[in-house]
Amino acid sequence: MASSGTFIKGMLDGGALPVLERFTQFTAERHKVLTHNIANFSTPFFKPRDLSVESFQDTLADAVQKRRRQVNPTGGPLRPGNTQQVTFGKDGMMVQADPTHENILFHDQNNRDLERTMQKLAENTLSHNMGIELLKNQFDLLRSAIREQP
Image (cartoon, rainbow, N blue to C red; front, side, top):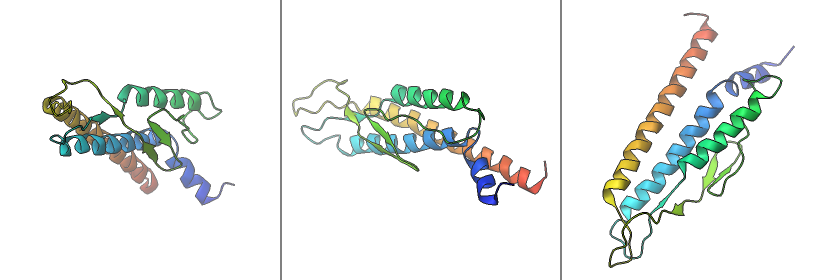
């Protein structure tokens, strides 16, 4: 018979929970990078930075595919591989944002674009809020299952 700790761990590292957890961690870290860009909008020689959403999504998708090939395809820990920008730890991640080099270079050597940065921030905020809402829904389902109520 499995211990209650193993049972609870199995509930929390199965299904979509680990994916949603990593997703919201990434969007939170990206939010910090984007707001740092905004804070330094007028700083001479400042180069805006960003995290690659596509690279993160690819890494997360690979980790999900690897987990699906296990004996229990929806259970067990999610083990995403590190990228150039993201290093995954047991419970978190460390990020190293790269300069974007996508805007016009101004006379003060700053290549800022407020509209594009604000668009990225708005999109990231929507993604983060969606991830939080999906996590909340997953925990509501667990709570209902524990109470044995619909």
